[in-house]
Length: 381
Image (cartoon, rainbow, N blue to C red; front, side, top):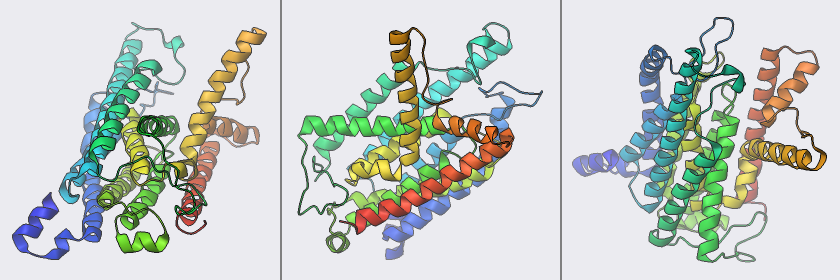
């Protein structure tokens, strides 16, 4: 909106150019995070907005840093993207999921305060207080995702059930799902990505890098897919209007890079469920909109690993307890990053060294996945 107004007031086509708007969105988001995050951290610290239990008389950093990131990304989107059905769908799902995650964060903070006041039993929790129940969260995720999926399918032009299959040209095989199946797929992808991002948000910087690499991939695909000549050259579906997602992606990248300034070890603030769920849901929706949902397991392999480890751990534990009378586990701990941390500690590393080793290797996996996924999407068919 801001870029459009500047274009109309000045007549300079620069303000209407998509590359300029994408760059401006990234700079705007990162600048606002650098300016506002210290104030936000101070505000949350005064409120004692933490969910982790304090150790060795050391105060835990506040949570909910991701709420500010989502707010800034949303503002950057309004300023530098031309609003259409694609942009509207992303904003709705990102804000709705952020609200659900934010409520969860607030309830965790409240539970932590009740425990500190001696009104609840700390032994009922492990490392931090709990918020909304998983069932309530999943129900809310599906309600919002189904509503947005139905809206997108009905009102966005060219939105259909065709799927881009890895390694295969669309001229050879471009499978089509009926509307009900496609809407369910959209809901599943959004909810799964949001949950995967939420599970990944367990260590300093861990969730930010796969979110950044996913946004980079979607931004490139959206820019190419929205251009008829480029999409024809790369043999991918041409989707008019989807290139307006490009500024959203750059805003996410810019905002998260600035957020890492404050979340790098030792973290001054944690993202919290509001940010991880909101941004994860937006990423999942964007994969669907650019017809790259089947590439999400490649680009977002970290989210997949984290979510799969939790689901299989719970399922295997319940199954073995029912059959054998005693539950057994596949991983030493879930999500899987905790499993690797314990493994590195067995090798002689202390906790901090094991965490650092795990985080850096997960980051490298995200970067390799971005390279491989981009290569497959554009060339390997």
